Length: 629
Image 1 (cartoon, rainbow, N blue to C red):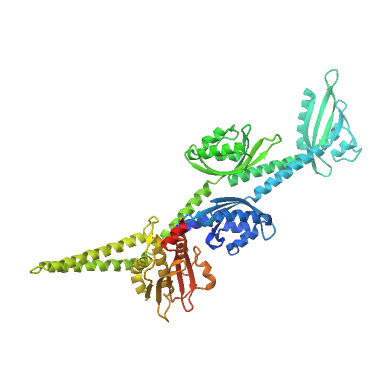
Image 2: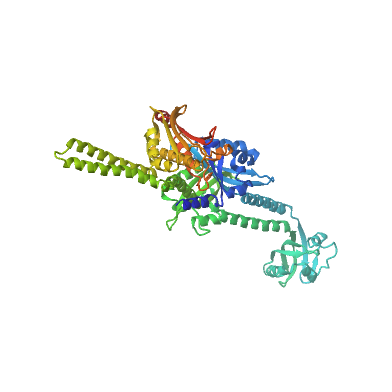
């Protein structure tokens, strides 16, 4: 079960095509995990991105202050999500643009705990838009700067009177054109000759000519020409002369071709990124969609669009939100961003994320330009990721069940043996002559006591390893620790561990989930025992201690084991980091999450001598209630 859960988690996190980072807010905003996609996007390794300062340094200097201010609002719990279009500058000086959606995850008490940041690389889309704008400007410039050259062609004589300027349009030196029909034909790019013949035939029928064709200059280059003119007819109705203007439209045609390529690239980019776009003129309710947005809504391309048609696709539970958004958009010119669902005809649900920018047309009319992204796969992945995180705590408890099997048998066997012995004694006392009723009653009471002991053992084990909801109650930390010790005692004894308890008297209660806190104590005891499993030159002494401290109540587990490298202290509580050959690396990570959800702190310090000390502090019951309020 653990292997499958871990594989699913890594498949979602590490193998995701979108860059993801997980930020632990209790560690000054340091990303504790980044996936390969983000590392590739930013050109940095996991170790380099292990500090939030590196991520901040990559942000373009003009955006750092603004981005950091809004991010602090998220970390302080003033908002639950944040979208930023971030501009990163990489090590080689190149730029990467990303649409980053930050989502705040709160702990069981509703306090900010983690931030998940999903980075969508929009660099190519930004560059495509920039190229599109540049080509459009080039097209406008070409149209403004084009020069028209007059021509005069006597059709019946086959004589074409050209000026030096017109010869230049065909790449000829002044005076080099012979003026004949055949000489002109040789200048036309062969595949376009039939286009010209068709245009001439049309002019002979209608008197009007408008055609674009290519000519091949002597140096082999191709140039686009546009001819507009009029055909004149003689008294017998025969065409005899055509006059007009020829313009070099090569820059415009090249710009148009590049524009078509850019539009095709943008359409393909929208398809690959599941992003569609639309415009909405508020005054007239004129709506225009991109081709991919039609695909997202599963409507036939070109279908006339109305707000009511869009409304038929919105999920019924989101209709109120949809109508509110439309109403607000009509009354002002503010940008807006919203997430909503579509209910498709086949019953499937799509999750969409829309971002709209308000503009004004030439007449001052309000118009919105928007992008809509289908985030269904990402939403489902996030939900799966959340489910996996919730299962980790349960997995870490269940993983210890095999190691405690002998302890379970020992703990249950003792009260069962007592029950059998007491029952036999009771029978002898009742069969005596005369019957020893007082002794029988006392023996029966001991039998009942042992029965309760066996029942309590089973109840504690089912609670500790069962998948139960969180229950907050006043907890006696001494009593909770004793129950864990009772469950672990046989295992500790088999490991040669000398257990010493120093439980403070009159220890105030803490408020929290008893089973979760016992899970932490159990994990610390087992880690301490494992750390001493290879120790042969000194007693394997383990001390569990409770006491008051400045933060409330502290529980400490101290061992005489192999200890840990002080330089790795900050990594001990990271998910999947372990110093054991057969470790999973989730026990201490889950333990820290549990303690911090109780508004406490979990620490690890090397001993002055051999071994290490792990301790956690929790506020007392009244102090915790004050913090929650």
